[in-house]
Length: 341
Image 1 (tube, rainbow, N blue to C red):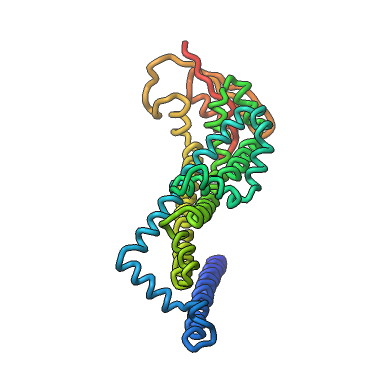
Image 2: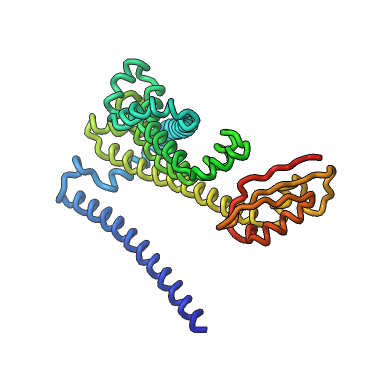
């Protein structure tokens, strides 16, 4: 009973702390907006330079009603998503190629480091000359901002995979494709998802850089146009919308990360189930007869020893695995081969 009371107190304390955090977040934002509006309205700051929340609201309302705001938002979102998918596809593909060829990775490593550290805005004038004042320039600029860092991070993650697991697969006749699909990618999945969360923001930054230099539509174009004609309400409205878009895109990817993590936990739980292991071993669900007489060999690695169990009866292997506490823990099956007679 005492433990239950303590648990309830702890849960109540956490809820109270979360409520307090959310309150102060809202309070700080509301106070900032109030002070901004108050000082601009009563002349403490110049509303022509610093603008005011009411002016931002009015121009946003006007552009929403005439449809221009939706058009510029759609252009920026489309370019951001396209750049993001290109970054992830190129980054993952090139990282896999570099992992498959150590010689190629050694050759390209200094170039990747240099290109990743190079300010991408310095490339923008060249891209405009090469590609013209077109959306291609914006997409290439956005991709160049994020792709090199993605390649380096993913390739580093691939190389940090436990080498013993890779050696076991090679020793037992596995191929590089099996190593990649069964070990490298699953191990690097958290890094891949983390790269996605980072790259969505970098893609948005790259798109805005491109729209600054080579665009006649988009939120970046509105910022440049507003600063040139001294319409600070237009500039601030575009910046606020960019902040909202970045938050929404990040939350979407955070939800994707949560779903993937949940499925990974579910799959791990399913792998420890006796029935699912039986199906993986035989290819048929538990209870169904085997159509051919088969002999199965499993190499089992408990914490301190390795030995072989061989039997024509799958249940014998399952019981052996259960005896070694394999099913109820996270021990590793290094190999599983089926020999038809």
